[in-house]
Length: 266
Length: 258
Image (cartoon, rainbow over all chains, first blue to last red; front, side):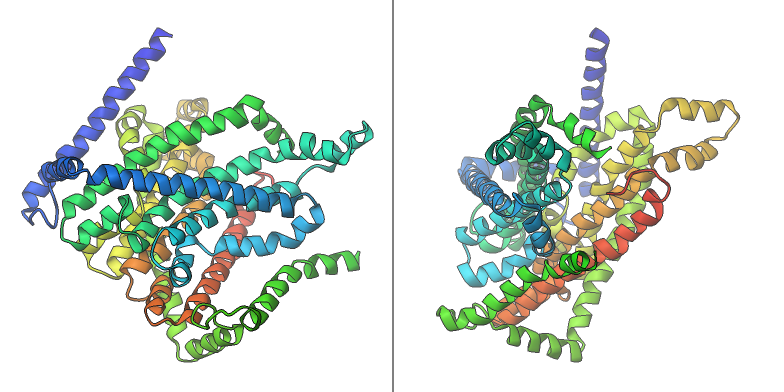
């Protein structure tokens, strides 16, 4: 126990050294290159830009905008994905019929939808939310359909022969069996959605972290671009750590579904 | 047996046909202006026109070339570094937190800096693609190497193998499954980022073609671009990567096919 803790501590120290070395290299590189702050800002420039943006309240406002869009979009996407999965999924026949269509739409990446959403909904929140819903719903739908096609009929037959009704089979056998697929799809979609949000904000928004990254560059304020990138990275790690990981734990790990999913594959 | 096979091929056509039919009749039922939803004929004509004047092929090739270049550069850097990190605990402890952070900003967020450093167009886009592919496969290489049991390494070393022999005969084959999975998934990330990067920093390519068309309200070009993006990805993923997987991983019995 103690040894494990020392090992953890050593790991943290070494990790901090790694990050420190990165900043040192950045500092040395940018001061040696002599190309100017616009072309290659120093860490100090970026820090000053961060403090300035924070004091003016711009950064907080942008962060809240981005977070609000992200959670609204991902939540709606989860809902749409689940409803679509329920409609297309409760029957192997329908699942097989719709799989190629779903794969095709899944293959049209979100960035390719952005131009037509702009034509349909203009620049703004509708375009961004539609994009996020799209990018979250399709992996969920796709994974669920894949799960349904591979669902072992023996499970259903077993439940049937024990006298389970159709509804009981759906709620007690099929849905729990498909939950790992749904969660995997959601994980994938939530990751894509974060990148989708950044690109959508770059093109169709006037606020948010993605806007900050691209607007900074457009106004020759490269230090603001880098502030935006760093905030984006921290934001994603925070979302992953405090939102997606607990979500996984609360569902897959708790119900021991991972074991059954792995057991099914062999 | 025949009928069920035919049905299996025929069934998936129904939703496609339904959507196509809906698309055909939508303008006559709902008052949708043509600039919002051009008819399928218009998209088809645009396809024929851009195919015959060669502009479509030019954009497709530009996109694929960037993807290929980014794929080669990104993986050529990621795989050796990933193996090094996987083999050495100190390197791993030192690099992983930083790399995890950089991974979370990999891809399109680098577009502004890439444009600044490499100019708009090919250089910037290839940088962004190589960047995301690097981070997408790095993790797989590390996991792959870490999954090779230490005892295997020790066993070969004690039989007198040099470190190069250990690397190429034990570690690389042992990590191969994960590496191939990484290659495939890294292309998926690269492809997504490619279309996004071309929207913003392109002067050619499918992403550029679609957003450029928005300015002229050439919605038929936008839809054509989307369809081609979808088809190209399915072809790339199924024809190229599934085949490679079938020929290697599944054939060697390393993982079971579905």
